[in-house]
Every structure is written in structure tokens, then in C-alpha cells.
Length: 311
Image 1 (cartoon, one colour):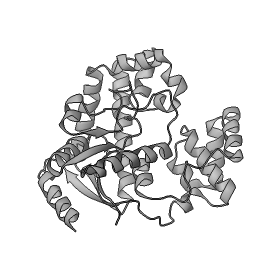
Image 2: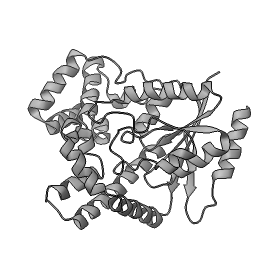
Image 3: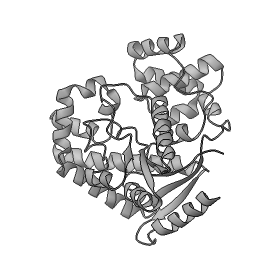
Image 4: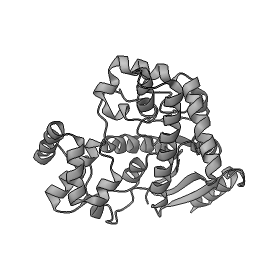
């Protein structure tokens, strides 16, 4: 029998953190991070980590534990998350995976025939050299020629994933987009809930409030601190993270704070849309509507999970 876990995911500012904590309080659960940026130390405001007060309510795992100078892959995350889940289960508690990084969730729940855990191949090393010599755009265009579906999903600045998709094609003759469609066995018996603010005006309002709160909490100062530490130079992913990317323009004098704030709101809205698109395509995730027209789903979800745990 596979171990049981639940996942609470959704777009940014959906309210998933608070709901996951409430479920953990009622079901004897512990939270496992499923966010590709909240894993890093020092990067606090820009990643919208759960506050110390929120983390004090129930145990949290895999937040704020990776040195931001360190390279950290999806395969690394899966290995660490599996250890954390095993620890939680060994103590008779319920693991509740919470976050908005769809790739992390997919890779954790399902065993993939091809993933980033395979060692450095000669093909990958060559592609890395070509990325440095030719640039990210040239490599992304090459991917578009052989696997347009993957190129559409992977941003050209995400060089690591572009390289991985090209490596899969060159070593197997198959497109990554084709491999992604291959049915894969689940590692866990799970329930996955996607929280979604269905009213667009309310969603945008919450996102703007989130952005304003981050700026008021010192996002600009945090960005300046990370820049002075050299984190953005050694971790390009951090420099492209929403929040830091926009504030960097302000720190460098390329725009005013109000301009950076507007760009931050726009980028966050666009990211939320991409998250909704990703989760909508996964038939293993149940969408839970949130908003003024919906009742608080906490108790109904608790009842559903309790019934599922008893089976």
C-alpha cells in the first residue's frame, strides 16, 4: 500500500498557505514546501515565505534551508521532499505538500522515465558550453525547431530546462513533450487540491495587495542586499524571480519605484495565469473555488480527507 499524502497548490495569492495550515491543524498534518524559491535562505520577502507566526502554528519542512549560492534541481527537491515525507509519516502525521511550483509537484508525485537526476552526460556538457558561447536565445530556437511544444512551455531564460529538453531529444530521439505524455506510476496515494480565485477582479486585487505588502515590508532593500551579496550573479534563477527582477531595475536606477511596482503587479498576474493553466491541465488535481461567492472550504475538505484516510 502506498503512503498517503495530500497536496494544496494554486496560483500566487490564492490563499493556499493559510488553507494548508488550517488543514494541518485539524488533521494532524505537517507542511512540506513545494515552491522553487521559498527553499532558499535569505530570500524571504520576494519569495513570500510563510511568516514566522504561520510556521509556528504547525511544523514546516523544506523552507529556508538551501544556500542561495547553491545550484538546486528538481531532482534534488524530489529527494529532499521524499525524505521529509518519510519522516512525517514515520511519526504518524499527515504530509501536506503546499506551493505553486507545478513541476516540483509533478516530479514528486510521479516517477518520470527521464529526469534531471541522471548524471552529467557528454551531450549535456556540450550543450552547456554552447549555451555559454551562443546564448540562451539560440539554444531555445534550436529547441523550437525540434520540439516546439516544449519550447512553448519553457522560457528561454530557463537555460537548464532548455538544455535538458535538447539532451532528451539528442539522446533518445524523442521529444520531451512526447515523453511527458507517457503514463507514469504514482509514488503516493494522494489527494491534490488546486485553490483558485475564480473572480478575476478579486484575483488581481489580492495580487496587488500582495505586491504592495512585499514592497512595504522591504522588498527593495532585500533586493539590494542580495545584489551586494552576489547572489544574483551566482544564481541566475534568483535574478529572474518575480519581485527581484523588477526591483533590480529600480536598484540600478533604470526605473522609479512606482514603475517597478507596476511591472511587479503585471508580472505576478501573468505568472498566476500560467499557474492556473498548468494546474488546469492536470486531471489528478481537483479545483477548489475560492472567493466572495464561495463558502470557506476548510471543513468540507477536512471531511473529504478524513473519509479518504479511513479507506
